[in-house]
Length: 375
Image 1 (cartoon, rainbow, N blue to C red):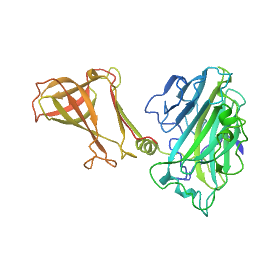
Image 2: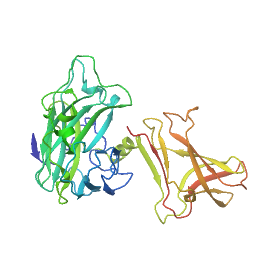
Image 3: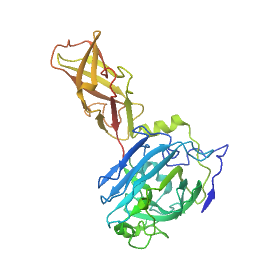
Image 4: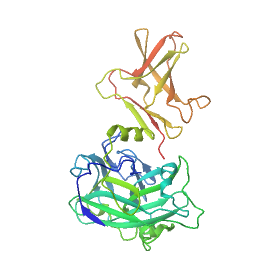
């Protein structure tokens, strides 16, 4: 089912949308990344928070992914944009390109999937492209390896699609895992070789997945360098009726995104960005706390800029350049559900133990610290 875009309801259904950052408003990592598609088996989030890309097969196709201020009026000012920059008209069997969001099992229990009383769900979204294409929308049960795909069409105007998926009662013994692990995947297929598109599309009911039946009948975003794809206003809700897209306060969306990824960065030209406070623990090192915006989903991977000269310690009116060694103290309350992690900076010698200190960027370098607990 499709319909032209409409303005948001004055009284949105708060909390119905299980998708995070469906309005494409938060992009902590980057707002535009070029040259994507070059690495086989690439799975990451290049730009917009919570939206992963999966690239398989090492084909010739390349694209730029960006957060673009071209969303439909009354829905969102922002959208996710895919711009094909290198065509791929000779598609190998194992090639694949899809954009998807992974959802924690404990956040989708309302669906009741896989047991008696399972619910239908509806996915609605706003989409446009550089022309008329057919792409696929897939729901994938990561707990039990079951899936279903529905096709949708694009035009050069924003159109809202409302796609209803049937309940999956199964045999009553395969519910979605009730945990912080990935249980449900909502994905948009934009390119696929015969491995994923060589069969018959599984569209009528949930089934144990067969790769060849997951993307049969879709077009390829890589068919021409003139191709663009735009997506926003993505909503997943229980029941066979799509409500108006839920307009969420940006502070709420940010906090949801921070559960999976947080980045503190120093913009180029902004001197001595403060990251955390601490103390000089030995004559060669200091310990610092890195406060987080909210509790993370799990113990994260800690990422630094990677260059020792980018960091410094400020102590006793002195700035001392230092390397930093991120670590997580899982033996105390700084573990999985903590809102605080520690960093240690090291220098050759000459520090005074016991002095208060601040960890900061070294002058005006574009330095960052981030924690990643993505699914």
